[in-house]
Length: 245
Ligand SMILES: NC(=O)c1ccc[n+]([C@@H]2O[C@H](COP(=O)([O-])OP(=O)(O)OC[C@H]3O[C@@H](n4cnc5c(N)ncnc54)[C@H](O)[C@@H]3O)[C@@H](O)[C@H]2O)c1
Image (tube, rainbow, N blue to C red; front, side):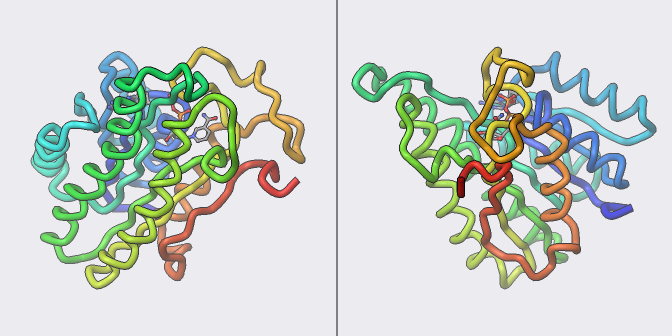
């Protein structure tokens, strides 16, 4: 087991990639705390983890509220004693060209997707620093941040920001033994925050299908575990080759 004795916080753990990460981390011995805005989803994944013999809990709240994130960290520590790993999956996306995007929607997407990731990194890292035995942070960028797109400017800017955030935090948290890396998925499982299912997604990649959520989770496990001990501040594309083809 690669995460025996560890405690992992998984934001957005109620669905798709975050759900797959929660199940995989728990199967590798971690206790998993799901932080999600949707109680029904989070509770269902906790049940799945427990049915498989793992340990999990959930905390409900918005990633974009610094005070809610701080409170979440306290709650997780009160339940599980510490935090060793953070996987930041929670995000939302716009689906309109910039010329039609309401300004408040631009701000909302940056708040949730970029500031939410930042707040979770900040308050979990403070806890990790206080514990004094390092940790691992896995952020989620997107292949979509690495090229121009027709209808998701706020999401792409947020995801580009996460690449920069990941490098900065890798440098700033390295003295505390906290490794920060990111994954840039291509189309994976269901649509971010949307209804388009795996079967109806057809990305132009080298594989001819979207990634299974589990194929993102296995890379998150690699980045969260000591198997990637010498990888710092990187954003790894997991996109079936769509970025290079
Ligand atoms: N699915 C894809 O094709 C894809 C592609 C590239 C990148 N990604 C990235 O991977 C990560 C996971 O994507 P996904 O498809 O699993 O997402 P998803 O939309 O399926 O699930 C996101 C989860 O986050 C929760 N959430 C949303 N807003 C929240 C908030 N404000 N506070 C707390 N929780 C909130 C939702 O309730 C949901 O359970 C995201 O960061 C996404 O941008 C996904």
